[in-house]
Length: 322
Image (cartoon, rainbow, N blue to C red):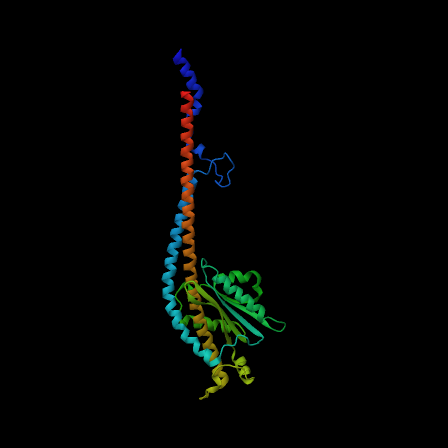
């Protein structure tokens, strides 16, 4: 009789001590902070998958930071050496950003790749502000865009003002010969009184300054010289040989534009790599912080599941003993 009663009681409390499948205990996809009272947290498998993906992203960002640092060291020396090319032209012809002309061409320099912070947005914003400043009833302002990122942004609302687009500049290391050919191509396709080159001047790994350099056409240079404008030390030199002053100014303007463009491309490349280093370093730190939070969530979820199972076993055992 006693054994029969024990069997009946065992069948009665069997549901209490039968272990549940793990998937059923940890099946809720609702985040822990959003789960209502009584709903269990997310499964440990979901958290593990998320942790794995964050670790992979962190490895990628660290590798990209190292690659950017290597490229920065290679470009920085060339950019510093190129500053000596355009500085004599500033002394000779001056730099007059406020000169009032009818035909303005804004040369916007950007990168072809992203993941480098707000460096490209800064160039585009500066170009748009300059376009607004130089536009008028009898004035025309056009864009020459170097780089895929500036092209994508300016095509949205200034498509009709874009005269020329050139991309994949930094696919191979640039030298002065390549940039001079590029400058000659720009001069053949646009009519200008003033070329305004917009780029980011490199200061340090975490600092760059939006900069605008102005190159005037020979006609504007002669007009400003006759009007008594400040154009540097050109008038203090005597012209010898068979060339006229206009021919010399034409050659100087073309050479000045190619030198300024060469320096601008290298300075912007340095700023791009520095900004990418900073962006990837921030991304790596954020991935580490997220990994710490996910690890804490994983441990809490696992401990909660273990505690729940132990509570159910102890409750069933206590019910049998009672």
